[in-house]
Image: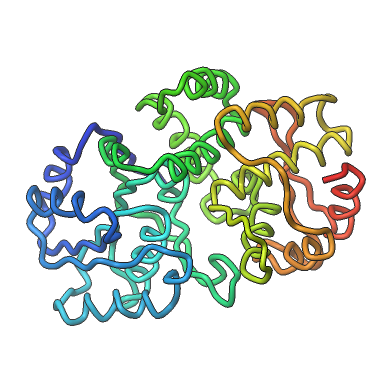
Length: 340
């Protein structure tokens, strides 16, 4: 299985990829309507639908609405659905494509940094249920992923930093040189360039190609996500004033993973402090707001939990990680020991 990834300056290369397509439908985040208009101007579409891209809207109701749009537009089994937007949009539109008429093809056009380096890659589609993220969904690869760099020009700073968290996470997994380069560039106030975006995206592409259905290596991509998902869940059930985006929650989770790794003796002393300083320097949060009692419940209910245990990603060093199956209670005890 090969993932087709295209990293371009704009959408000018899209018509060539669609030249053989007879039925193309666009589902896009209404916040990037300007990008949808550019796609419309370049490509022959049979229909387009705007969706609200929020965690509240990431539901079966929205997926049903997308399927109804395709049905009413007359989309058949040969249709191609273009998902234009961030990770929420690509997740929902991809899931709708997977279940409409038992599956039609889709392609992703990620417009946020987070989606370009992570959420729009890998074939995971799905929606939330009762506050639990992505609890419903399937894994199915898109026809292609097309990254247009100019879509980041209007991305708000905070949303951009969410993508930075996933980019740094990818480099911590297997690319120390690009981690250092990213920090140098981001600390200067500049934004990530095409080289960094491509490098981070290719890390995920490579892992997914080798382990599409997360039976082994793909679990490394969950670095920071065990605690990160707990932070996101905690926000739905508490009155905590601070609200974190997915990327910010992953940043918090990555630092906690580093501290837990130190507590286990997996990495050198001081690595967690180094990563914490690095993340803070580029504007990412690092302190975990979730109390231990709530953390236990959140991790135990995570969709990746397996019989009371979780495959937790530990950091050996920048560029090296390992996955260890650990009881949830052990994770909580170690987090408390590490004063997280």
